[in-house]
Image (cartoon, rainbow, N blue to C red; front, side, top):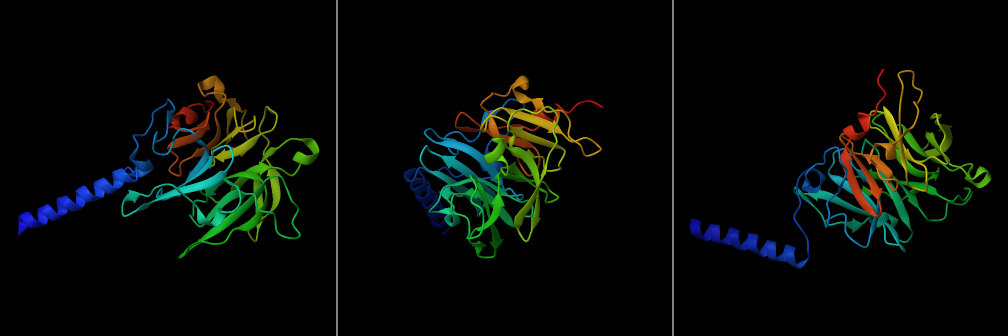
Length: 290
């Protein structure tokens, strides 16, 4: 009897392995798709699994429980948001999120309470709202999944800290000055109603794609249409320190679209179409000494 049970178990395992091979899916478990975590030198994230040829991976976001992963992929014609989550201990295959289908979708970000996901969506804004070059929409989590998207306001790329502060690229003056800025967003009834421009010393063209640290202690951003990263550390008085050019610290000038994992341990960014990650110490060790 025991031998029969063992035989059946082995048969099911073999059958599952064959099915997995047929669909080209590798069973992945553990944090970060089971990948070996990087050190101070950037590495491509999950090569052949998440980072694959012939696709450009731009930005990512993890849920604060790190059991969901959302990814903005662009293949030169279609911009889509893909996702994977842990089900029964195993990461599911990457698939397009259902609530953005029909329009180009980009730059997802999940808030720390796991209740809201922000993203750029190319759907026309609701009647009465001013059409802008980039539009932030959001969906809220329910017991049945994400709600139908609702319009939040003008902006590009959302980031948030553990306190719930929301940051975005301020697009309100791009049509008049041609420049964008990093701003903290004022929100009322889930709508963007104001932008508090961040005063980071040493201005470098148009600052964009703000990446706030989970604890709010530093801000990473890029300046050249999604490339060329800088970091600024928040001082004890709440003001921002001089921006530090990360290309002087070993980062490729084509690196951009940064995001920090919810546990604050790793930095993700895109570079030349691939998704990279690195130990956050590569950033925190740059903090100016007191």
